[in-house]
Image 1: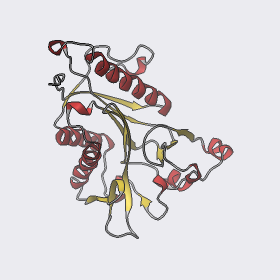
Image 2: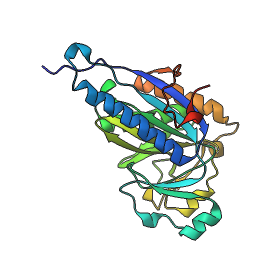
Image 3: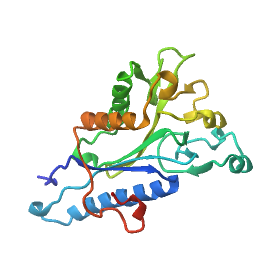
Length: 256
């Protein structure tokens, strides 16, 4: 009989505020490796000494940047290197799923770094629950967020092809059931940079931001609602770090 470590549904929550993409990606990689190392260490332990793995939820806004998923088409970036520099937008090929997308101010970018063995080992379910959390938030504003079969993310007017527009993009990476990357939810985002790409590699559908759909949008309030929705759909217990769990080369991420 296989002995499994105790499940841990507690999640360290860190709202990093405005942070450069490369720094956040490096922190993701550090924490992902930390959890994988915990899992590998458990293989060496006796059943009675198995230890629960950690989980993290990082929240942030980024400086303008385009990121291209590992299966994406570089041709979906419509700017050359000189044009990127002139517009002050970075470009990074990364290891998440999906195609090209944009990150910038006014957009909540969330990185759940979870050991799915603590919750369920089903990537499809994981993606659907990320979508469900955003759909729950949109309902608070009288909006009917929904899915489009075969496409990941959350859309408005999904059933009307000429009007369908994405409000939340999702792209993840998993290894040994540990997740990284996550979703980008347009709350008060400037959408003009999306005109420089084929968003998510889908040429016939648009993008939108919550503040363009309803009035009186408060970015901090929507972030809080999103956190509450994630807590609900994953049945997780969020906690603020009380010890220096962050790596020493990331002092700016230490909780105050």
